[in-house]
Length: 130
Image (cartoon, rainbow, N blue to C red; front, side, top):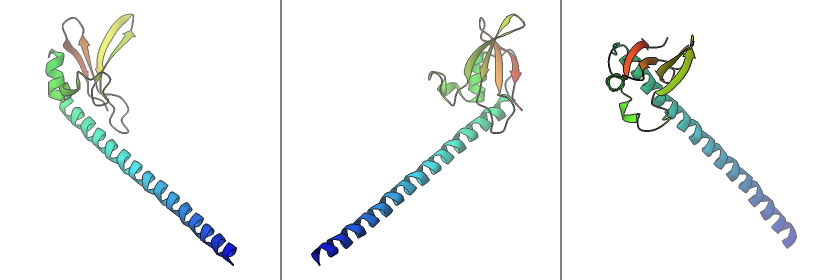
């Protein structure tokens, strides 16, 4: 009789333990999903703010002035910060092209970017994205 009672207790505890582990993983999953959604919302909000401010940038401004207007100047000292524009160097028609590229707006077709002269740090072309 004691043996079957112990079996029942062990089976009940095992079943409850499985449920507890399942609930713990479900809660961790929900928290992770909410965290990702909040992070996506914040990044998208910041990117849209950059996009709106891009319209205010003018050719001939210094890169510092342009970044101040756009709003990412506070991130400039963090290399490869996800909220900041990244400097890209590419070759176009045999000439080096220096651009400051920003994160793309969700479902956008192209990044917002400022082309600049590396010698003078002046903006030479502006593309605010699509």
